[in-house]
Image (cartoon, rainbow, N blue to C red; front, side):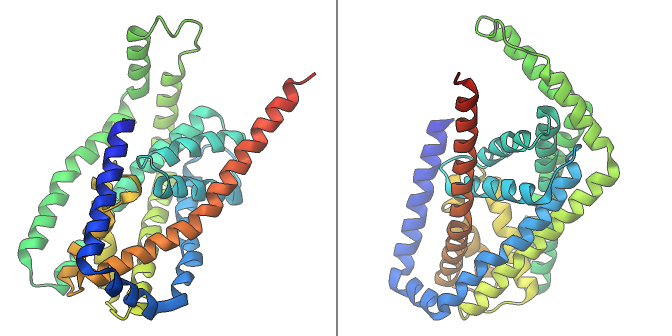
Length: 327
């Protein structure tokens, strides 16, 4: 797993460097300089779509939770997934840990994140479908739009299957049973039985239909709100597009990142996705790369404080544990 992530990271970095070298560093720098300092406004703008995501996550937590704490945890999750050399699930693991430190039991915390990730896939499917509709109204390239419609149709059955299995199956109980069977020698004295409890909590969350609908609506709203970043950044870069164009660009880039989720920080994937989608709207590859770099600047400036906060939280926890163990 680690080797696969490292290889994906290296390949993504090579792709980014090759794309920038092909278009010319000077050309891209000129575009970014044209926009200037105003691009920094993308940083606080990120708080709004993230807040909408947090409201969706909060609806799925079957326990009392505080919105400011969830916002901080969500910021840390996002920063880990986008800035650290991990696959796009590392942030979710840390998020579960931090949520448990807020007093939410392990089963409820884990179930909330698992169901939230599943709903995120549904929201992204709907978002990409909206993007395809916007693309269809803005381009005459029926070959591309038909291909995207087919891709959506192909991706729907696996998504439905995942939902059915999580909602009605015993996924984590069976995983635990397999671990018990194959690794019993190393699991002596370990407390098992959490798999069945987690399955039950996931089924309980899926049974809360009103909560699911609320979470899905908040997540979809967050994806749409995130298009504001693309729309504004392109205007500041001197290559404005319509709102429909921004939705199509953002949705197709999101689809590419979801498809290649194993690539850390979507290096190369985001750039290639924006170049391909931008071509359909007459945007040059240099503009698409400048847009991607502006997005990455925002991710770094927004994410670094979150990573610092994460390390401070973990350091404080370790200090408390040591203080309790000392006589």
